[in-house]
Image 1 (cartoon, rainbow, N blue to C red):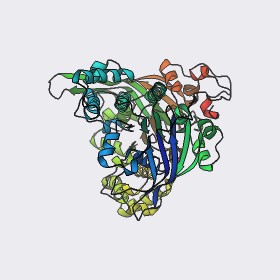
Image 2 (image 1 turned 90 degrees about the vertical axis):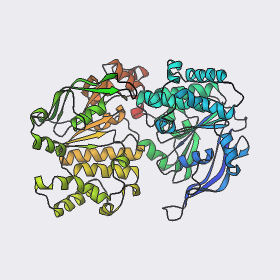
Image 3 (image 1 turned 60 degrees about the vertical axis):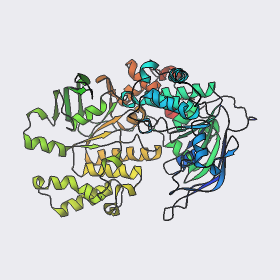
Image 4 (image 1 turned 180 degrees about the horizontal axis):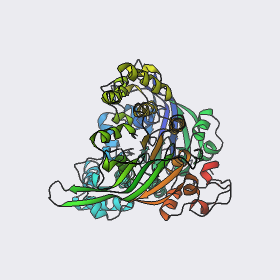
Length: 576
């Protein structure tokens, strides 16, 4: 993002040589070491790095939200408009938060109170920081804020509860709350990571628009360089608690000096179509025919029922050894489809066939065996693991449940566990450890190992890489491709990111509102989308603003046919 910043204006935030100490016994002494940065009015500074780099600890320290019994500011200063946050009392910090500085969190569903209406939660900011404002003025200000963040029907939204809004709408509410008292500094900690690509684009566009209309500075935390390209004026790259590179967005994105920055840039998904062609003779492993799924919902206090059509006569097939991508926004029905295939949900009508055998005609024994043949890898492996079981007990659980059917002994299961750990590049010592002892990428590798313990024919990966850093994401994608090639398993890969699907998948199915709106080879869907919805998904991919294309124009990104050999800009180019 390029715009003129008043370099002579005093910074709204100045961090000087900040060092934050970790508890003894960790893999390093400091979460953050000797970090210095400034944020000026109307400026967006992005801090980029992988998990554990110290970027979120830095933002929490600025807000005075470090857990005092775990992390401690050892040295340095954090100056907010000249006031040192590190020396502020709890009462002073409480007065500053929301008034002089505000934070937009990654997951608004956990940041918002589920028992309070949206309007009441925004009004609470004024109740605390503007006690002289009367009720009528608060109501007008709440409606104005909801309108400022482009939420439709502010009066209706005001009376809604958080669960009644989409993820993008909840994040807009968080932005409205942050802007309530017009603070000088806004900290946005991974605010778009949990959003689908179109909601992400809308939130980024909104943040850019609001920063242009207000004099506040923005400290934006992210691991995604494509997001950085959309919004940053300056970029700070952190690794293991230290700043390894900083400069203007153009300098860091187009002329990186540090090897770590270069590695992060190289790890970005670019839609480079790595899946090798499948032989035409490959048999069909999975067929879905006219699958329909309706959910019946009932109000908590009313008996009136409402029917929600999640899947509407969906049909598709997956060949043996093929990776099929299912792409769509939140609410498109893609995860419901995956859960129906895995038999977590029972469809209202339609049929699913595995190697030509219909699920509807299976007896109880065959139906139980279906769960062994179709396995699932979830988005959040931490929540899908039992925190009280070691990895060894978790991996053994499935095979031991089926041991009587397949004649497997304890020794067979132990050998299978070692084999699967080796396949996902994990050491056998992991068997005696607990889920919390691993990083996010390691837990996802273990989640894949758990699914493979059952020797499945179909592996369903539901947003399996969306919560991971780009470098870890690339490693998991490579792992899935390696597993497909070595084991011949078919993969149903569910994602909201077309770039990731294009990299891994042979074919892509695009879903909208429970229906398939487009299907074809990964290359055709990505480069020559036919439906307006798919073109919108491609156009919403971050990192395209001003990118210097190698044979592609903005018109191509909007859906026009590319010339032979052409590629969207973000696949091959740096950023302008």
